[in-house]
Image 1 (tube, rainbow, N blue to C red):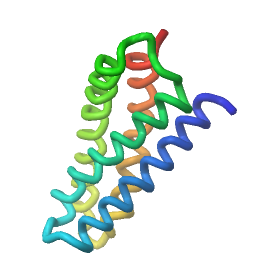
Image 2 (cartoon, rainbow, N blue to C red):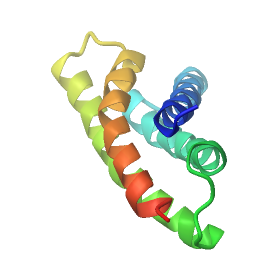
Image 3 (cartoon, rainbow, N blue to C red):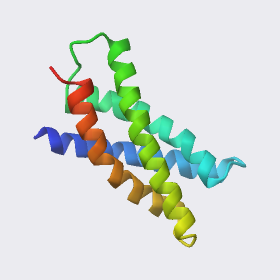
Length: 124
């Protein structure tokens, strides 16, 4: 199974974690679609780090703390892109459901994530 396929699988699981967290936050808290997404992104980032660490790339030669910090840095940068695309879609097309905007934003951020993780976090 190729690394790109495994990354896509990890991203799919991360997307599901993000979507479920977003749905639960919207259904059970007074948070709106924009603030709930900040929390759901953080949850998905933690899920995908562990999957990418063990399935996609394997642990780096760095210590776990340094690897986690690098993963978090790349993840935060790509999450900002993800969030901005999500907000842009919702603001430009108010009839689009939040989960559809999440899907669009996630696809855009996926390419940036792979490049960052493969070159800056798990490079050997």
